[in-house]
Amino acid sequence: MKTMFALALATAPLMGGAAAAQGVPQTVEPLVPAAGTILDVSAEGRTTRVPDLATIRAGVVSQGATAAAALSDNAQRMARVLAALKRAGIAERDVQTATVQLQPQYRYGENVPPVITGYQATNSVAIRFRDVARSGTILDTLVAQGANQIEGPNLSIDKPDAALDEARQDAVARARARADLYAKASGLRVLRIVSIAEGGSDAGGPERPMAFAVSMRAKADAPTEIAAGERDVTVSLNVRFLLGQ
Image 1: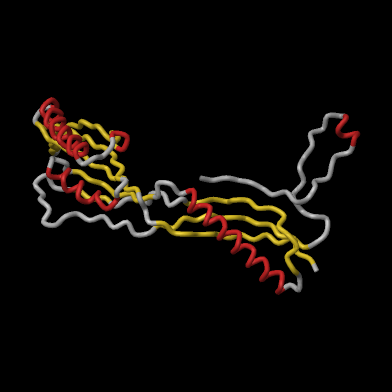
Image 2: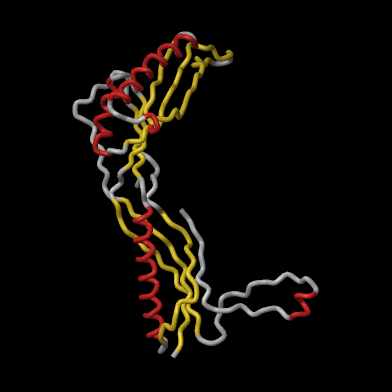
């Protein structure tokens, strides 16, 4: 979420009537008051939230002597994985096909053309877990049903608007405190804010996920646990102040 806005507290000069009559385009002058000292301050505001959304990719990789055999085995395994997700209460809107692939497997030799030895079929889905604490248990269930490829989790905040507003308030407060410091050091005081521009924000979206693979013969000795931790929500502002006596 990135917005740009300015609070214009100064009037830009108007062009002369002759220029307007000739149809010359009008330009907006920078927001610089006629009198006073201008101070530009950049500040980052932040707050924290516990992620409440985990996105994990789970799938099945199958091998077969023929393309049809690999696809058939893959389809059967994937059907069991999808059925397990449904039984676990994962809504259809939270399951999306991510990858479907069929690739030949080759044997390479010196000075001879590659020989196809079989085929590998891959099918994976991206799953959104709205109960992060349960995601580890559900992953264990998916592995038991045939899933042998898992990537993630991506942890994020589902509805970050309130957290972003907190970060904005923090950014304004930090900018004002910094402006007061500079003004005092210069023998001046802050008269008012001239403009505020939002330079960027981080809504606590997903970071680069951890990746791991599960062997087709793997059997977990202990349940998988997903720790949500905390995510920073940040907003950057550029604030222009007018200083004076």
